Amino acid sequence: MQQVSDVVEKFIKPYLAKYHPNADIVIMAGSYGRAMKQGSYQPIASSDIDLVIIYSDLEKGGFKAATQIFSMEDVGKAMGGDSRIMMVDTNIHDFASLHYHDKIVRETTNMAFMNTMLDEGYVLIDKNGVAPILQERAARFLADGPAPTPRAKWQSEIDRLETFLKDIRAAGSAEEKRFLGLMCLIHTCEYVLGLHQCWRSGSNQAYRQISKFFPEDEKKITAGFSALIRYGDATGVEGLLEEFVARGKQLLPKLPEAGRQPLYPVEKFVPNQESQQIKDLFMKFMTEHLCEALGTSHKRGELAYLENISATTIFIKSILEARNAEQGGDGKAGMHYLGNKIPDILPVMLQAIDENEHEPVIKLANEALSHMGGINYTRLQNHYLDDVARIYAAQPPKDRQPWFKPGFNP
Image (cartoon, rainbow, N blue to C red):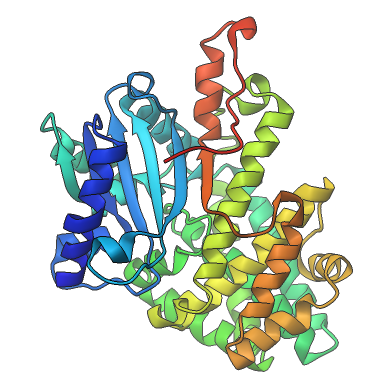
């Protein structure tokens, strides 16, 4: 625990005093936040520092709602040692942006990562004494759960699993079965959360909720997909997907015909080019995080590791789809799409799993992101796209200034 306290006292607090002196609330989330709150947990060496920084009014603070991510090289020196690079993720909001973010999350995306950070986090600064209220509200928000998945969206998720099931059965080689299983796992994990009408992950964190709340499903997913992805044995996954599809079809009639539409639709209020730039930056940010975790996620268990490398594969596919303005499809179609774009992707991903060799995977991600300067960055700012739409909606078109900025100073 001493190490975490040192990071807080010798690095984070001086950093906040220098760059966010007017912040009203600061909550440290992620591994470091849980460590401070629990008092007995140590984050792994590669863990980032995650901060939620809240102003009463972002404009007065000189910020917009965004995630700012950057590497700080002076962490080690601040702690009295050698220079050491650490990634710092700051999620910057005010109360208006948080409120609209919650509305979008509950009704549209079903991914409540911000409330999870608020709920689990450790309060560093609370100038107005409202941080406990904010955390209590976040806990209630999480407990209440998301709005039900619209029926058409849920049907598309069923269709996707059925496609993977069909193509895994028909695959002509063990290598193809393994790769299809790798592509399928992240979708299966998200689907299981949907089966239980729980908050989704959207990245590589579904294993946390599944193992915590649905341990029987976690055991079956881990056993089935480990056998398939590592050894090409599809028996367990085929039975598992059959079960999940059947359970999904039973849920279907209980779901609403349609979901709520955003109050300020992005496609209506944000110019297409600007919207795509923000989406591309998010993909770069997430892919870098996934690649960073390739070598360490096994410390959190087999499902955590396999889900992370599955998510990495699917994010590479999504980058290529966005870059080329096309859809690659699921199952066998998606596998062939990836193979056409990156011929080495199947052997590289399977070798990574077999030999714990992840550098070639990172090179593939770097290649996919070559139009954005590759995977690495020292500064990246990713605005909340829905909040950009909210702000633009309140402004006359002639007064709107482009939100997207290519860089920033932390």
